[in-house]
Each structure stands twice: as C-alpha cells, then as structure tokens.
Length: 48
Image (cartoon, rainbow, N blue to C red; front, side, top):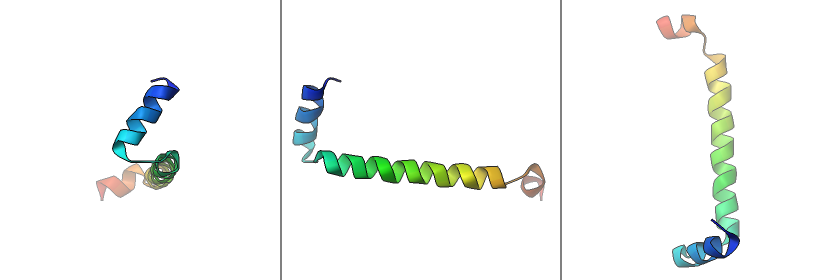
C-alpha cells in the first residue's frame, strides 16, 4: 500500500500513526519474548 492509501485507511480506522507504531512495538516485543521463551525450552522439557 502506498502512503496515501495507508493514511486514508488509518483515518477510517480512527487510528493515528502513533497508535499503529505502538501496536507494532508491542507485537515485536511479544514476538521477542516468545522467541526467548521458545529457545529456553529444550526437548527434554517437552517430553516431561
């Protein structure tokens, strides 16, 4: 989507770019947390 489409889309949703950035940041940090959590689980843990 080009910038204009994004802006129109955001206006329609009543969301500011800041709202969207914040949501992306939350999603990214949740993803990072999940990655850390997954990497700390070993096969032995799963088999228990």
